Length: 581
Image (cartoon, rainbow, N blue to C red; front, side, top):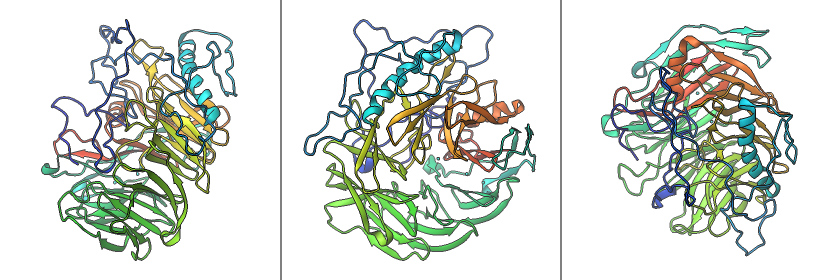
């Protein structure tokens, strides 16, 4: 549903993964946000005045970090380490028929033991020190203490109206070896190679979400408000484009299967098209079965692909198609007690079902032709909000607490749908980067085999006004943390993808320092530079990276910042794509 833009002369509220109160699933009434409880006698944190003759401080750019207009210091972070109420031990599913004590983070363990790299089951005392390391480790210890106890139980450009501006095939140089596009070592000194200006948005729509970014061969493919278009990753030249009107917030599958995907389009987003992303050919198109005929009927559509299936769900119905031919495989049964409320694809198709309005929820694995492969029934009071991975299946759920729309636990399911482990999540310590109400959509979380990577919540760094965070790696076979990875320089870092077994992450730019792509050692989490952005383009990179719904992508030695939200008002939208190499 469209929302008005922010007031004039103010930046959009958030950035890449900024925390937003996501709309509740399919018609649920929205709960107002709640503030953390203030202890008796405790004064609220006050931001210190900015030092004289200093440049404006960078608003924390992205992923879960509230934005501050330039010239204002960031608010003091929420104090870490306050006592928590003990919760149910993790690692053991509750006894059948007995609801567990959900929503309460476990108590902290003994302090004074600080984590280093790597982190074993218990903390390791560092050899001492001062400055950033000493202060950061003290903060990190509070995060990890919760993680350790909880663990014991356990996210890619068009001509025409979209205005591609290719900057030429300006290739970045490297330090110490190869060109960096072959996955080998060598630091790439990159610059902005080309960009795509934001698409036009109809004034009556105010703003629009434009999901859908894929990589096939040498191309990056992106949906816009008027097309689905492929661009050469090196030059930005258009490889192919399929025109389709997408005036509102039409959806698209986050994934592809065999180089194919599905995209929603039409005046009311009432059509679905199957596309071969390798060739740019339309495979088929279908009109979604309409029950209301209203302009908003398909506003909250979810799409996913896996194997030979393209699945679509919206408030009133759900349907599955053969991905290659468009043949209808299933449609929601009229009057069914349990209805499909969302899909997530990739390695397998996972469906979320709800039995009655606000009733019990189920999660199912969907096989060929729509056959149910397995099923997990959520305990009473548990709401499934997100699917972070489909191999293995990792669910983000709400199990009580202050807000019904916050993820409080991550649940790992076996191949047969059995609950194996849980990880306790608290929004003042962990940042999953989840956005919106769709079942998919947590680009700040990366799952690779038996390892889960998430970012910690930003906290005070060494600099007087600085903020920093870390990346936490969990071993999903045990539910325990493997290591905590710090950025190479104090600042904000987010997971992006995995390349050759190592995590690729993005260290955000500041007001006067460019960002960089780093590789984190899979054994100990130590970060090493992979690509350094040019200092000459720091202002442009900073403005792009701090935009709302701007996501980082890494593919074959190329780095992209891609925007998925655009405004009708001039000046509010960021570039559609910024390509670095």
